[in-house]
Image (cartoon, rainbow, N blue to C red):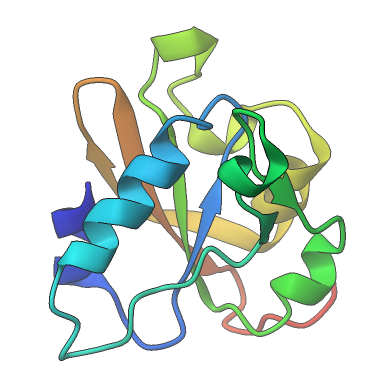
Length: 133
């Protein structure tokens, strides 16, 4: 997954995790950091406020202001379970919850990279802009 993001990342990209991706976050963060980022910078985990380790839990704390955090993001790497894993739907933007609903209204799927239990979905702003709708 890290290689797919690395090979296809563009300047300004960000990473966002779906629900049920708690184990993917620290793993992907580790592998992304292991890669050499010379063509572009490593996309930041834009919604993470505090790591799971810092929380002493299995889940990171995220910023609640998704609109503000994604205001300048034209492209999002949405990371989550592959279809069928933990009940994930085939359409990554059909998952329940306010975060995915917000993203689904403003972004569309450009490319999906599916792995055994996870997937990285490249989303692009629908109208080319990232401002509030």
